[in-house]
Image (tube, rainbow, N blue to C red; front, side, top):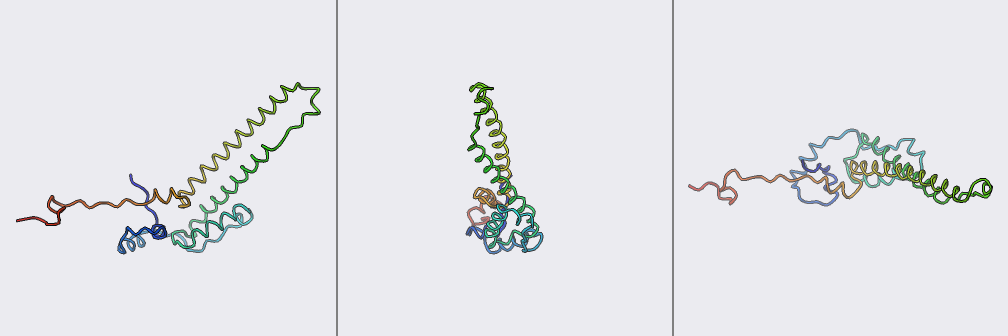
Length: 180
């Protein structure tokens, strides 16, 4: 199983010149396009500051390529919302890390070691849950970036393999054909 093929517009945008004009035209004709070039941002993305910022960033990336269409809006919107949720989780983790517990009113009721133990358990549990949620969002983002060709690795691993034509007989590889 080889690599997935990249849309021809991405191949051309990246400046790869390994395809002939005929191969480029053939690829353009064979690519399936769903929808039109009208990439309208959904309302729920516009209402979310982080998601809308990411939407505008992605639309700038796609402005010079013709493989993204209105049929892709759902995936683009999910990516933007997931990115926003990821940022919110990171922000929440940072806020919680800066919180300090004030045990002064409980000094007489609980020994210092007990207070520290409770604080440690609460912090570890919250940190673990937040880190798990952040990692899940990050994994989702990476998978969507691969599908949307938004990271360098996705661009590289989707280059199609060129099939090498094998000679029909042992003399063809020398370009002489059959000798008589």
